[in-house]
Length: 263
Image (cartoon, rainbow, N blue to C red):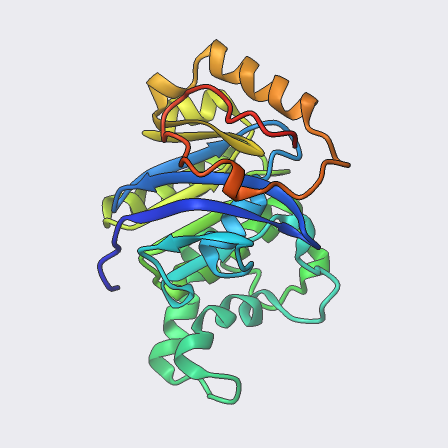
C-alpha cells in the first residue's frame, strides 16, 4: 500500500447534465482520516464521493491528493447488480483486477488472498453461493472482502451499512477501524449520526453546498443540522446554471453563511 496524501477539494461543483448536485465545495481531509459525510437526502453526498473516486468529472474545480488508481470505492448497494451470475469467490476476486487485468489468471498466492479476505468478513462456507442467494448483510460482507483485496490507501464508502444486521455492522466497523489503524484514509457517506459521533473523528455536513467541515464534535451541532435541512428545502431544481464569476470567493471549510446564489 502506498502512503495516502491529504485529499483536497477546491471550489468543486459537480452534477449531471449541467444540473449541479454540489456547489463550490472546498475542504481538506487529512491523510489517514476516518471521516463521515452527512446531510439530508439529495444533498449531493454520493456525487461528492464519486468525484473523489474519479468516477465523475467535476463541472468546475479540482480534486487534489488522490488518483482513481489509489481508491477502493464501494457504491451504494442499490447500484450493484445482484442478478449477475457470479459466486461470492468470483466477486471477491474482482478486487485483484488491477493486479491481473481483464485476462490474467490468479496464481496460488492470489487465490489464497481471496480466501483470506472471505474469511476476514465471516463468509467462509459461502464461496460458491451466487449473489442472489445472499442476505443484504452477507452481500455487503462480500463487497467489503473485495475492497480488502484492492489494498488501496484511500477507501470511499457510500452508505456501507444500509440493510445490515447489528452483528454485520460491528464486523464491518472493525474493518474500518483496522484500515484507519493502518493509516488509510477512510471516507464514508452515512445517515446514522449516533454512529458518526461514536466512530468518526472528522465530519462533513453537506446540503448541496458545504455547511460545515471539521472535527465531528464541533461540526455535528443542532445549528448546522438545521441549516443543512433548510438549505436542502430551499433548493430550486429549476434554478439557472450558477455563474461562478459572480461568486469568486471560495467558501470556508467550517460553518459559515451560505454564499447566496439561487440553487
